[in-house]
Image (tube, rainbow, N blue to C red):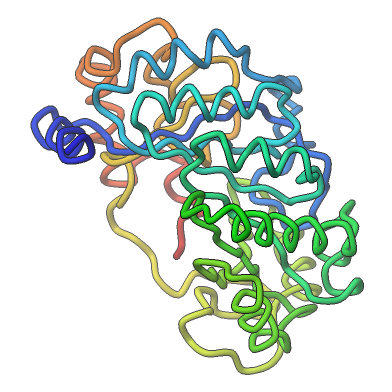
Length: 316
């Protein structure tokens, strides 16, 4: 009944159903095709973790309207010392919480904490079934540690007869792992993982210049025939062009992002905070969402009218 109530609030107030909270903007990996390159972010925003009390104020200001909370954005969420407390706080407000992790810090103790936190979903980023393919793409990662951590989490969840969190395995398709699709399906099945998400890597101009896209596509873009459902780019003289281009933004009315400093922005690809609604830790969502500035921002974004919209990474 509670979720029905929250859906009703969203429908009545025409507020977004989901919020992305950037609990920090740091990561312990430096992946070559990262959709949120930290060397780029740090040119205008310093490394930062969101303060726990600020996070709680954000949750308090949105919980009447929002029912899904992504407790991460440009960061590895397990780097935050209070991440379990953050998950618990949102879960106690009857919100579905989700994290995506590179699993390098998913220790046995952290596994047990997360399994008892009320976490709704966890996404494992695991893009290769051998050392060469994994570490060649997930720069800074250790294949053996990550694989072991994922297997332990799944084993412990099964032992404890836990239905939640839902487990999702994200496998970003690239040249290094293009022959492992059937193997990753078996890995997911063997470890009782609930969902497998095979997805493309993103090389959009909001984060990479034309020359970088060209070089990275040569290095990582698959060079064998792959089922069409996994391909969202077309190759054009060693450059990648989206197969589908949206004339309207599909997300601006449904989800928004809060940066680590508390500012609410209209898009998760706004790495610098250029398109700001206001300070989410200081304002109720209804007032923030319905003021004239916010409405004007969304109206323009809905028609992809901002410079960022022209180079957006939402191509799936």
